[in-house]
Image 1 (cartoon, rainbow, N blue to C red):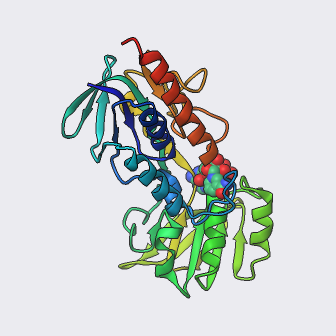
Image 2: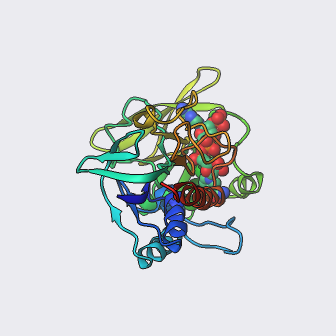
Amino acid sequence: MYDIIIIGAGPAGLTAALYALRANKKIIIFEAKTFGGQIINASKIVNYPGIEEVSGFDYATTLYNQVKKLGAEIKYETVLRVEKDKTVITNKDKYKAKSVIIATGAENRKLNIDGENKFIGKGVSYCATCDGNFFKGMDVAVVGGGNTAIADALYLSDIVNKVYLIHRREEFRGEPKKVEELKNKKNVELVLNSNVVKINGEDKVESIEVENTSNERKTINVSGIFIAVGQDPKNAIFNNVVELNDKGYIISEDGVHTSTEGIYVAGDTREKVLRQLTTAVSDGSIAATIAIKEGKDK
Ligand code: NAP
């Protein structure tokens, strides 16, 4: 019997663990892939108060080590189901706790176009900082208009020969300051009001087909395409214990409680106005504190 089961070892889940362990609670963290969540792919974080600049990998590793040092038990198992009585069923076993914190984040959205699945790892990537170096001196495309796409395009522009940034609208969702920086890069070409409709190649990516809002198509020769069109949560497995909105995010009126008593939510996986590192760690600390308080008499 655990005090708290935490699902997800991203910044929200690890912060919840940090707070729970410092309160001497018996916890276990489940992670399906690797610790760190999405932030591990950020080349640099420059908007975390008190830290001028840090790589996502260094940040996530430090947080992970901090939690491990406190004795955290982390199991790399995939959670399949959570019951109302706080039993958590993974692909390996069954576990029981007084409280559960869901901190599963979100996963990369796909374009769902021809060639996308076929060329994953052969020119199609969802992580510029992981794969950018494979494209040294080549031409690549980045798709998206949010902060991730902009950061990816900036990062890649220092490594590759040329970056085409393809965005479906004229205006960017990402920070104007970063957009300005991008516009000043000599080897970045903005392809606006356009969608990528097909990825071509034999064994690896050779070109992409782009269609603009006037339905004009053109082919751009690139060796790689970095898709950064946002994330989707993966909460369908929890819909017996939590309420989801139309986009699949967990609804929580106060940002912590779900529709089931003793099951809490933290981080990007919940409905919220700002998905950032700062809000993820804030969620994690609050969720753990409330879970500890409300689990005391159980
Ligand atoms: P995002 O902000 O949701 O942006 C996704 C972008 O992809 C949007 O520009 C969207 O276009 C476009 N898009 C979505 N679906 C598409 C499709 N099917 N085809 C073509 N384009 C599509 O996602 P994100 O950039 O990954 O950022 C996620 C969160 O993390 C945001 O809150 C962001 O601010 C944060 N973040 C922060 C930093 C930082 O350093 N501060 C870095 C990275 C991410 P529309 O604009 O037309 O909808």
